[in-house]
Length: 91
Image 1 (cartoon, rainbow, N blue to C red):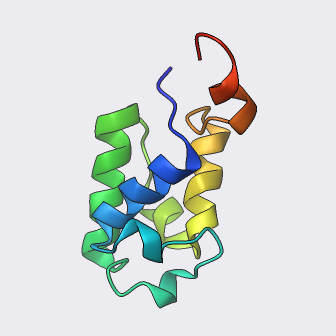
Image 2 (cartoon, rainbow, N blue to C red):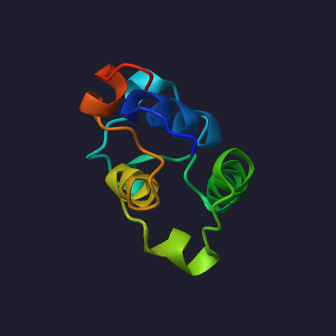
């Protein structure tokens, strides 16, 4: 199963939302990101499908109100690496 770190997940979202990774924080609200509009949401859906074969429904996408919700979605499906997982040998 493919996993990414939180920093990598933020970089992925930054690309989808046309932001710089340095500008994204997990506590940011969707409304604070102009690029997280309908097109940005579609980009995120496509990216999750392509990278992880995850299906994020349009309804689930609409219910995501902050960056942390996307991180939680990745974590729920086992694709967000914990810091301790990344430090382990052969991780």
